[in-house]
Image 1 (cartoon, rainbow, N blue to C red):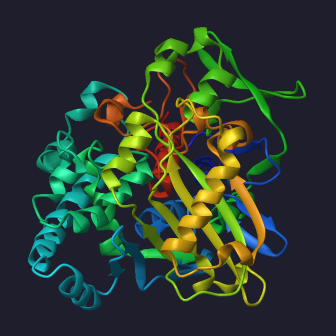
Image 2: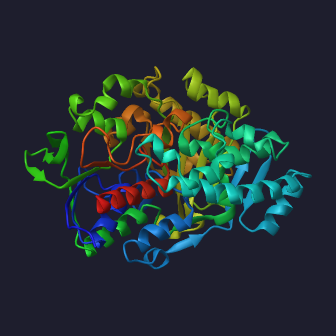
Image 3: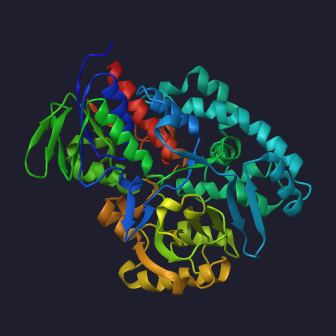
Length: 493
């Protein structure tokens, strides 16, 4: 059915693995070159003294997206991973101490609505009904590539037009259904997945909370990084090869075409097609000569809009705790918090933060009677004038004090047995994330669909892009979809 090709993939993150799985299953010769000693990129594990953390993603949502990728590799998603559906999606704690527990079960959720947000349930039912259609139609639009402006003139876009709502913000769309600002926040914090404020994020992305409410949130036994581990195994079973600790120094080009790779040791790998699964701006600047990428020269890259960064704490804790798997803690002024990150570009002193207590679901992640506590704090990316070498320890101390003040773990500072920190500087220097912008290019209207870097790179033939910096965008389901789109484009070329 397909002409067999030699495929060279740069990076063994989820997008590259997804593309590789599909292409290997279709009979192509697939090699992945990964500079680190393990697969996964930001979807890799951090293992320290018997504790296992996910470095990056901790939410598994939109299961059909994963199932589709696995089916294209001849596999059944539910049989390849040990999947645990969470009964409580997450617990939100507001600055005034009020809790809102978001249940997957709608009967339990209604009880919580009546307790915390009386009178809002009818709005929720309207929101759910509208977003069921919106999400189905928008997802259909995200599954196709946008290589030319003519891509907009298709039946899927026309059918979805009134639901895309990109001209409005997330908070504006939510105001059509809800009165309470706190309730809107529970449907808006997901804009953080895109590294944006919900007052700026396009209203298209109110589909994110709907995906959680409609399809649930899952956890993989052993950690969310199991996704990359399993995909790597499947790729190898399909005949693909993964070369670990093999850094790519440049993409080889000739007469406007990508023809292969040059590794750090000087070895050249020739290929019919090249897939770049790196951070977008980092890959452009480090793997291609500027004359090979006129659409994304250094001036253009500098003018593009990038997401926020994150300050991360990975804590191995003595003891176990009765709090949900996922927890979001808002500060006293959430909008001010987000403005500090995106506009003022200063370190929030009363930050919102996310805390994962994964051992309440999965005891394999820590020794007996211990816990892994994962903390994510959105902060400005490295375009801000913040000296992280100077601020790292004091900001760590601030976050620890906030955990003791605002969570059930009142003595966490005395219980820490293992501790690791990642700052925006570490994201840049250790994981090669441009400006430490962990959610990649921002999802502004000016960087969506055709206006986002294309899956088939326009400036060079035979070069394809996957990952959060290309279409459809950041987040595990969409990153996997970028791999599927690239695989289909290669297979049909």
